[in-house]
Amino acid sequence: MKRTNVKKVFSAIAVAGLLAGTVAAAPVAVAAPEFTPAPIAWGSCNSPNLRKAGAECGFLEVPLDYGNPGGAKISLAVSRVRHTTTRSQGVMLVNPGGPGGSGLGLSVLGKAVPKHAGESYDWIGFDPRGVGSSKPALSCDPGYFGYNRPAYVPDTPRLEQTWLARSKSYATACAKNGPLLEHMKTTDSAQDMESLRKALGQQQINYYGFSYGTYLGQVYSTLYPQRVRRMVLDSNVDPRKVWYKANLDQDLAFDRNIKIYFDWVAKYDSVYHLGSSGDAVEDLWYTEQKELAHAPAGGVIGPDEWNDIFLQAGYYRFGWEDMAKAFSGWVHGGDWKPLKALYDDADSPGDDNNFAVYNAVQCTDTQWPANWTKWRIDNWAVYHRAPFETWSNAWYNTPCLSWPAKAGKPVTIDGRKVAGALLIDEELDAATPFGGSLQVRTLYPASSLIAEPGGTTHADSLSGDACVDDQVADYLATGKLPARKPGNGPDAICAPLPDPVPAQS
Image 1 (tube, rainbow, N blue to C red):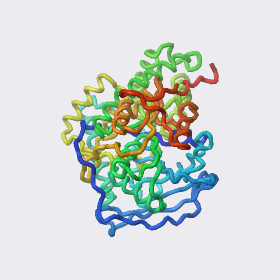
Image 2: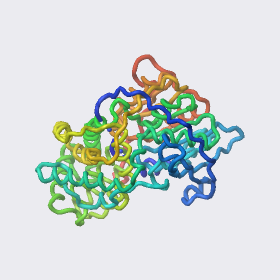
Image 3: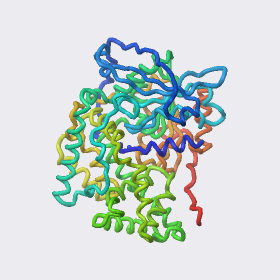
Image 4: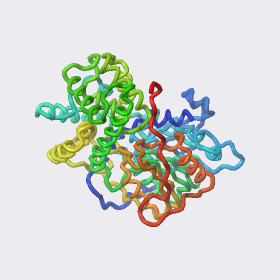
């Protein structure tokens, strides 16, 4: 899947980013001999937010290669907010998604659980291998998301070759990270979670995963089903589509969602003056994108940056107003600075850690098509149905064509031995389309699925929807799940949070 804006997910919490068909692969065997980690030496955290929350921080040393546990080691950055009740329900590991998202700050997540239900857990945030504060952290070309890049849509042979060359150059640059690239699969991170369990002295873990973090939870619970006590998976990856097909599915879903956003902008034409119908707003958006190819806003926001800014509207309702204000300010006043601020927030020019890890995981979890002709045919076919995001998403993934590490085979997900799981998803989620949650429900017979019909926001549990959040709290407090219904539909229904209403309307 393409990038998930972890900043959006984390900010929402603090206030209170898929490929060829089904792969019939056997579960990856856990490497032997087993690795016994040293306990974590807990100390003060560098982050003011974590210190304010009373968190402790430290590093977990794990093998670079679990097939050679006595060999080279790497370190994972870990944080912990301890339980405050007389009875502990154990540890709760959290992953925000990506792959490539930093989870170190998510040990504060327990404070967002209603009814004080999070207070009986030790919440464990961690940066997966290669991510953020873990050592070493991956980086290939920090300037890759610099401003005014070549247009995404390869409507000339020159543009196509330019992007293929850029993608290959990025993959080649990643080779400097050395042996770590060979050990960045989701299975490696699942084994890291098992090492973390041991280091924390726990017989079982609880787990809360968002977006790609749901797939990490699926893999861990397949490999170590008896080690899972309770598990919440919000916005589920469809394990049948890891990873090529999943990205093509995303393209269609994001095109649907951006139209929903344009309809919302048109509803408030008295505020934004961008068109009185969704079609009119959409036409204006594409017109501006074409103009930016010739005259970038402020010399920095070209057609690609324009696309990336508004991609966030397909992910979340959070930020709809800011994007509409920036759109309107540019069209009616030539103010480009809000556009740049939004782009910088989404893509962080000068820092490619998220992107490097994203590729390191997705390019090696499974073999991507090796023939560019297939990519070209598939993406042009989808583009003609869904032009908004298709080629942006394609180029985000094309480093996998020449990735300097061998691909493995994905685990066949099997949740039959898992004691229980709470699944959550909005039915118009674009990053992880709803069919993935339905599929995971079938693979985990002891799971229940909460659906939010009409909702377009990705991975937003514990963000203020009482219907969802109270059921999360009940599950974490008692293990109680919504009653499972017959068939292959959701087991509980919640209304999504309402669309924002501009303050000026």
